[in-house]
Amino acid sequence: MERSPGRTTAQTEAETEAATETEAVTESAGEGLDAEAAEAAEGGRAARADDGEHAAEGEAGDGSRSGDGGGKTPRGRRWGRWVRRGAFVVALLVLAPVLVAQAALRVNYLGDPAEGTRTRGKDALWLGHAWVDGRKTDADVRALGRRLRDTGIRDLYVHAGPLEHDGTLPASAYPRARWFIAAVHREAPDLRVQAWLGDVLASESPHGMRLERAATRAAVVRSTRQVLAAGFQGAHFDLEPLHSGDGHYLALLDALRAVTRARHAQLSVAAHQIDPLPAFHAFWKATTGHPKWWSQRFFGAVARRVDQIAVMSYDTMQPLQSTYGGYVAQQTSLALEVTPASTDLLMGLPFYRENRFGHWAHAETVAAAVRGVRLGLSRTDADRANFGVAAYVDFAASETDWTSYEEGWVR
Image 1 (cartoon, rainbow, N blue to C red):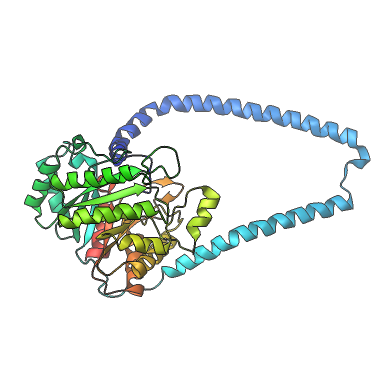
Image 2 (tube, rainbow, N blue to C red; image 1 turned 180 degrees about the vertical axis):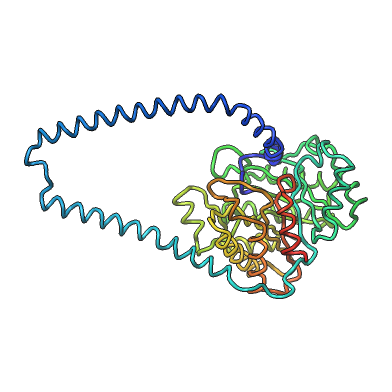
């Protein structure tokens, strides 16, 4: 997903499962590290003290050399004031738009959602690779069925990739897919199981999938036929980083839609967020090289070509629950405005916790996301039938995440 386009979900899943073991090793190493840290700190203090001594000597020497001429002239003092004032103005020009935007998002989080803005029974859940590579058992599927009972989840996006950079998909990537699909349908016959296929695109580095190559797109289409033949009821694509306006991606979706329609299967995609301001993706590309957002027009073009579109409405760089919730409300409205009523629009929920630039766990909570979704839905199209949320991801979800989803959206 957008949160880590350079790694496969299987790697992320393994890292998550290994976190507990890592914490235990860290504790046992703590005492030795404390001793080393103390010694290093003492050395650092000594070095700083030594630097201070030299600085003091230098200051004394400078004073003796400068004599009466060491003070600033009136002209120098005026120049210093102008420099400070100029720096203040520049800082204000940079910070003012940010502060205004943050205030607007907080305002967007105010109010009460409309009655009836709850699940329509069209929600989805991203599942890790362990469900199709042999690590899960019948008991795990039964537990999953109990977890999903009485929720609004209808679709499961189970990680069956990643695709190779040339678009091919080895069958060895999902050896237990038929078992999993059959087991899910025994426990919950109404659930649909889709193959989640993704890869890193060579849009910002020399390595990755190149959608501009017709042979690569044709291979992706063949891989889709392959997973549908294995029993999956749809194909869910997450190709990142995907730049706004990519015509090769639209051509791929057109080819895929012909295949899925012929098989009465679902075509689903994970979508980037929409420009919060007009052409913001172009500004971000010019300043960072990574145009994180899509234009609203491009989002609509993608939505018209698929059966389901799931917005990755997390990793938003928002510092507070209120601004994050306001941002999700805005994204929900923007997506509703251009998504056809016949396409299922799903807003992503962060069923994981991370603290890094771009994602703060205390701000990006499921509770704030659900409230934001309901506010955006209320203000834009409260009666939209083909609408839901999509939870990312099962192996990182906590009980708090599930409770917030169920109490905020289901009940």
